[in-house]
Length: 223
Ligand SMILES: *Cc1c(COP(=O)(O)O)cnc(C)c1O
Image 1 (cartoon, rainbow, N blue to C red):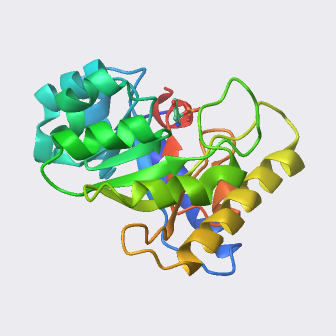
Image 2: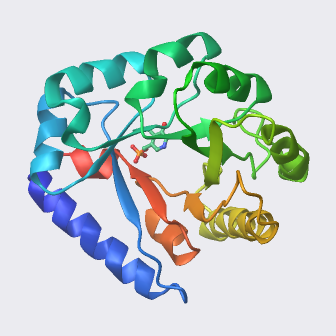
């Protein structure tokens, strides 16, 4: 199957899944290109994808050199080392992995504008996963208020490593409830209207549960 067919098929499935969500929100597809060449990333753009995601600074730099900064919106989805902030912060449109105050402090120092960030939450509690514990989210956001160049647009999570669909669904649902709690506080620096959740194996469940951004690699780039 071609990249173009992958994009068509996935967009169709996304549409069907969003019809099962009572709010029928618009969902943004982020094409995750971390494991493919710039050539494949270019094919994604040709097929109509408007947002690309990378999880390493080197990958981001390489893809942008090939495609251009203005070719699409750029999403950084991996753990970001504090010492790499300076290198990439002006090169990205959205950070999906704000997971510690020290990172916020460094972004605040280096960025020339308020940066749209998702706070990564470790809903499943797996020790292998990055993210703020759900019970710590409000105190974390309170601290974030001191950094004017951080704008919390939403929450992000990764599903637990399990085949159990109910368990995955309940993790996504918990993140949505947490997002609603934060949004209800109407913090000026944390509108928190968005939900970044869902990857190749679980994006339909994520959309049914209210995802507004899905991050999809494997099933999008396979041939
Ligand atoms: C790799 C990655 C994805 C995409 O995963 P696939 O299973 O290939 O769709 C999404 N989010 C993050 C944070 C990733 O590292």
